[in-house]
Amino acid sequence: MKEDQQCAEYVKAMQVWLRKQPHLPQNIDESVLARFIQCSEMSLEKCKSLLDLNYTLRSQAPEIFDKRDPEDRAIQNMFDIIDFCPLPKLTDKKYKLFIYRLTDSDVEKFLFADSLKAFFMVADMRMYSDREYSEGEIPIFDMGHLTLRHMTKITLPLLKKYMVFTQEAHPVRLRQIHVLNIVPFFDKCLALVKPFMKAEVSQLLHFHLPNSTTLFDHIPRDLIPEEFGGSLPVTMKSLKEEWRQRVCENRDFYMDPSKWKVDERLRPQSNKNGDGNLFGMQGSFRVLTID
Image 1 (cartoon, helix red, strand yellow):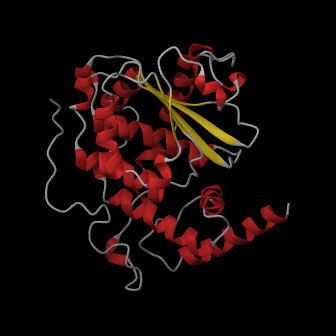
Image 2 (image 1 turned 45 degrees about the vertical axis):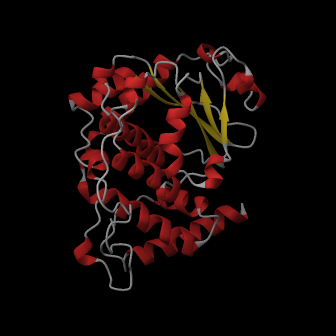
């Protein structure tokens, strides 16, 4: 109760601070501010930095955060071939579980930029609509339908933007990361991602072979759908359709630029986040090629 009261006071303080930051969106919901505060370990200074960085990086990654129309065929195509599924129950430590898996191995249907865009559309809907705050996140990535050809469609600049944003600016606290159904070319996948991964994040990784039950050494079976060997009485298809519908029903939420855009012309001179490219990509990156 004391922490809730402190959080409410900090939300008011953040609202006052926001009015002095005209470059940032001014219509950020109180629930979102509370999420940033809690993710910043109840530190106002950390919260200010995290919030500013979040919206600044969005503006520097238009491939992921611009033109986010849920009715766009490209976005619907990603929902057709990928499950982006937050699971309904928290762990006993109040951690939120999220399953990400490709459901169609047809490489021609997979577009990396569109998959990231759809992923963050679900993430943003959670940020604005979830009323049950979690103490951390446990993403679960299933590699079952991934092929070597999918890897050739990943561009390094965009991968870096995704990795920087999720590790530095996303208001979640990662607790564990699980990778299911490890593929024979997993070493190539890891070599691709590792250069952009912080050491403390890599220590959260757990890998699970096909047909193994080692996931349940970390997560209770009753929190995981039956398709993954758990006992949660819900299908991935129903979960995915629930979130697809929620995203589509809130089209205006994504189409309102005032919610997401930073106006660098209005940034105070004392605020340095707008100086240059925060993704730090000097020179050019080529599309990945694999022998």
